[in-house]
Amino acid sequence: MTSAFDQLPARPRPQPSAESQPYWDALKAHRLILQRCTNCRRVRHYPRPVCPHCYAFDYDWLDASGRGTVHSWTVSHHAFDPAFKAALPYATVTVDLDEGVRLQAPLKGSDAEQLRIGLPVVIDFDDIDSDLTLPCVRIAPRTGTPACPPTN
Amino acid sequence: MIALSDQAAVTGVGETAYTRETARSQLALTLEAALAAIADAGLDPKDIDGVIPYGAGGVVAEDFITNFGLPDLRYSALTPMGGASPVAALQSAAMAVATGVANHVLVALGRGSVAGGRIAKRLAEMPQMRTVGEFEMPLGTNAPAQFYAHMARRHMGLYGTTVEQFAEVALTCRRHAQMNERAMMRKPMTRDDYFASRLIAEPFRLFDCSLESAGAAAVVVSGAARARDLRQRPVWIGGVAEGHPDSPSAITQRVDMTSFGLARAAPIAFRMAGVTPADIDVAEIYDCFTWVVICQLEDLGFCAKGEGGPFVEGGRIGLGGALPVNTHGGLLSEAHIAGMNHIVELVRQLRGACGARQVDDAEVGLVSGFGDLGDGALAIMHR
Image (cartoon, rainbow over all chains, first blue to last red; front, top):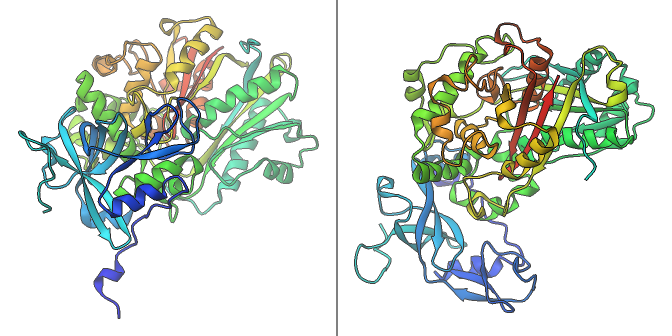
């Protein structure tokens, strides 16, 4: 049986590596984890085989705070991949995580007009389907302990 | 370091017509441009003993042996740096002819029809895009307009750069294209036209983005001793360098996303050439997006970091201004031949062969390349 949903072009999906598989698995469990070198204890992201500071291969995984600030952003008005046409316009944000590394994630729940460099944000989780969860960004509440606002 | 200064010259340039679509193959277009460049130099194809094809394409050195019957190809290389590939290839070619490994190195780049091969799909297949492919393309970040928009937005936030300054670059390139019969976009563009163009990836509008083109361009690089005896007056490679930025796996990961690998290449090339930015008469600067020109003007040392926006104001980068930029119309209005067309234009400017768009008495010029996730290359040439 086919539905209109089946006609949508397939969105590009991550092809995890040996190093990144735990990261994607953790996102599915709504955890943001980061590689941490067990030799020099420095955190790195995106996942990669070797520590760029001390060249050690061994690492463990740190549960990230989920807090960060806006480094930069864009609002897309053109779908270079047709899978994203229905989502237009959408904002993607480069985030400086409190752990000292960066990631990119789509903005959810707020208007992109509010974005500016240095704005506090929190990382939330967007369940695309049963096999894929992506990180997303929400603007942090103005006061109190940063927490994820309810999903829209 | 063995100084490459004036050890090599561009002795021939050539290109095909530039179009939006084509029924011809990337290989056929590349070979046509190559033959034009070889003929321009006064050489026979069988004189070519070095080949550097485009790193991001299906054309390989074997194609030139097969199609031209090259009897003794001694040198081949790839410089897979996206839009920095052609200028980086000049460095590689200069090294080959300066050391005597080869005498005449052909650098050729062609692009076939874009139909069925749109940019998001092409990029996803490139190995240097592996990190972007895994972590960012699934989010909806699929093409350079979106990658580089983050760099431009941050530059605006840190330095106050404005979209009105982006418009200066777009309008300048279009004005120059109107004096170039080869340019794809010769229709006049007003500031209102610019601001009426649709948003693509903020802050970029359609007219901040380069064209998608089919066509090819090529140059021949010859060693100093041989260059003097050929058909054209040689255009010398005075200084040349490539520069790779920190953390080039994704724009997100760049320590300073408002500076390119070009910032590392520029001091090397200027020192090698023995000139300063003040000596440059004409500059062909890679313009995949308007803002990328502004950033490179800073990285090249024409102004301080953050001052590229004000630098392009007031007609400074137009013909008749202090630093004419992209006299052919660039990737924004001539064609997107990945910057090989910028090299061809610089050589013609330094030959004094550009007709209505000729920069008066152009003696020293530069051509830059920018590619992938911040790669840069620079050649400073003189007549």
